[in-house]
Length: 390
Image 1 (cartoon, one colour):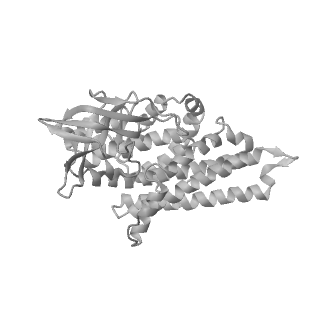
Image 2: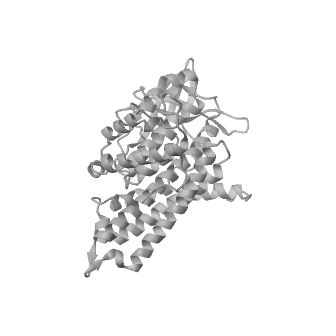
C-alpha cells in the first residue's frame, strides 16, 4: 500500500521514500520490539540512519547535509513512523529541534562547529524549551541566564527534552530569560549548553507510556557557565526563534502521525487477510472492511494536509495555520486509527509484541508534543480572526 499520492512527488522524493521504507521494514521492524521492551536507545539504528544521510536531509552540502529540503525530511519521518515512532521521533527531534536552530539562527562559527556531526548522526542536539511548571505556556519561562564577564550563567530546569541524555548528545539549546523589558515582560534568549558542562545535570529517563525506545529527560542547570559566544542568534529573540522552530516541528510531527496512521492500515489489511474466525477470513466481514476503509480515508486526508503544509514551508510561504491544521488532523487520525486497529486485533492488539500494541501506546503523545491539540485550535482560531479568550 503506497504512502505517496500518485503524480505528486518528484523522482528524488519517491526514491527517498522507497529507500527509507525498505530500511524501516528490513532494519527497524525486526529489532525494535526488543529495544522498546528494554526501554533502550537504538544506537545502531541511529548510526545506520546517519550513514544513510537522514540527519542531514534538509541541510546544504557545505554543512555536511544532503542538500534536500524539509519535505524530504517529512517523507522520511512518515516511512519510519509507519513501522516505529521511537526511531522516528529520534530523527525528528535531532533535525528540527537539535540541528535546525543552529542552522537557522547560528553564526557561521557555530554552524561549522556543530552541524557536520549533527548532519552525519555522529552527535545529537536537543532543544530545552518546556519547563516542569510551564507546559504549553512557553512564555512563562523561569530558567534564567545572566552575563558574568565573558560567560552566561544558566539556572533553572527543563522537562520532557528528547535526545538530551544519550551517549552522543552534544548539547542542549536552552531558552532562558536574559533580561526584563520596561513593561516587565521577560526577554528570552536561546543559549547552547554543551553536554558535560559543570552544573548541567541530566535526570534519569522518564518511564513513558509510549516512545519507549527514545531518549527523554528532565534537565537541571545550577550555576552552569558557558562562553558568551554560545548565545544563539540575537539576545532577546529567543521567543520568536522557538515559535518558528515549533511551527516547522509541527509539520514534522504531522508527518510522523501520518506514518503511524498508515502503519495501522497496513497491519489491519495484513491481519484481516490472514486471520480466520468461524470458518472464514476476517477480511470477508463488511463491518471490518468499513472500519479499515475509514482508517484509510482518514490517513489520506491527514497526508494531504501534511504535504500542503510542508510544501508551503519549503516554498517560503506562510504556513503557520497549515502547520497547525496538519498536526491537528494527522494526530487525530493517528489516535483514532490506533484505537480502531487495536479493536480489530483484539487481544493481539493489547500486547507490545505486535506493532499495533506499540502504535496504540505511541499515538497519544502525538496530540500533545509540539503543541497540544487545544493550542493548535487556538492558533487556527486566531487566523480566523477570533479574539483571545480567557
